[in-house]
Amino acid sequence: MVSKGHSAVPANSTIFLSKFAFSFQPLADYEKLSSAAYDPKRHIIGLVDIKVTVPDFEMGQAVHILLFDDEARSYPGPSGEWDSLPCDQRIQHARRDMVLSRSQRRFSIPIREKLRPRWWYIALADCSGKGLKSVEYEIHTKNSLYGWAEEFSSDKRLALPAFCLLSITFLFLAAAQIRANMVLAARRGADDAGSKAAHPFARILAAGILLELTGCALEALQNLIYASNGSGSPTMHAGALLLSVCSNFILASLLLLVSEGKCVSYRMVVADAHRMCKVLAPFLTSCLILELWGDFATSRTYSTDYAYTTRCGWIIIMVDLGLLAKYVQNLKATLSLDGGQADRKFYRTWGTAYGAWFLALPFSALLSQAVLAPYVWYIVSLCITKLVTVAVYGALVFALWPENTRSHFKMLHASPEEMMEICPSPPSREGRQTASFPAEENVLPHLLPRKGIGSLASWTCSKLPQR
Image (cartoon, rainbow, N blue to C red):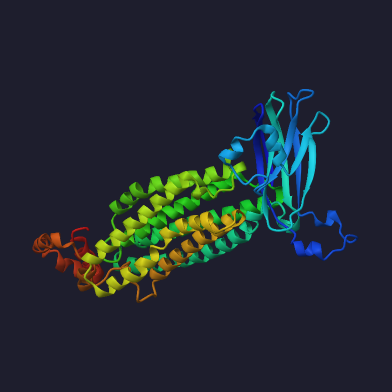
């Protein structure tokens, strides 16, 4: 990993420049070797190369380059106790201490670990009381045991294979849903010459899958670049996060619409999409900002906390749980109004399963906080959230599959009797519903020969009040 930047060092203080999770060589491998066979160069698991440029460096100024690890005796993380330590005591906690001078501004430090992967932190300290106004630095850290993935920190070693597999999975889902949309459009066009497109719900579902596919592919490409130069493309990474958040917005919208019975017991209209934007846009925008902060903020160079276990992260988790409560409330309300036994079974089984998507983020945050080691937080949370997303998208694709005769989603026109059953109105409106049909009786005979029974079904459902 290559970290570049510039910073100022206040007098008698320490600033963190970068962090990196190094792998380890098991202790058993060392114990098998005799002292004569032991070669320190062969058992280096990582390397840190540091280059520092200080334009205003003064003679006699004591500036230290410090390396800490995550052991309790070194630097276990930010705390009030650490902040209260004087500069000279912080230097005593360092695992490596190198003094910066006019002649020595480049350092190469080998890293050895025997028990487990550990986070290492690179910092600058000035204990002379003078400080530095401007410091330019370039730090190159790598895991020597990882081969082609040596540029990756231990927590992100499996990121490239994971995103490649996710891209392939979403590619298959996208192809399946596009094919389904083509069939739905053809069938709908045969029923109604004025409608040659698939149902809006199906089109929105395809858009969500394509956004997630593009985001995963972009992230895979960014990781491939990262493997070659150690820095990747921050622009591509930010773009991938944006696409993923947009996909999550679409999926959350579809799930909340299903919880309201849209496309199962009631018709979906344009106003439904507008409502979802008002409800979900602030939440998902906050998620995007938090993800970007977790990856690019300077404060993340001295903390290994999972972004969603910070104070702001827990607020977003609570909002996510609030959306889950809204989903459950909608599901209960739809069950109380829906009279079809088959649809009631759908809401109790698949409706409950779809709701698991809202639990993926809180569950991964809880695991990170209470169970997992810091160097596996990233890959575990990525697998949990993405695999649940794949499962829910896959379930929706299967539910909308044209050849699925057991689907509860109403994507095509049906008989008038079916429409009367699957498009009910809330009980408070049923009295007004029957009064609207006599005025339209003269229209029905003209619809039958011209557009067939499908148009009659569409007309019947359109005359029923919206939920």
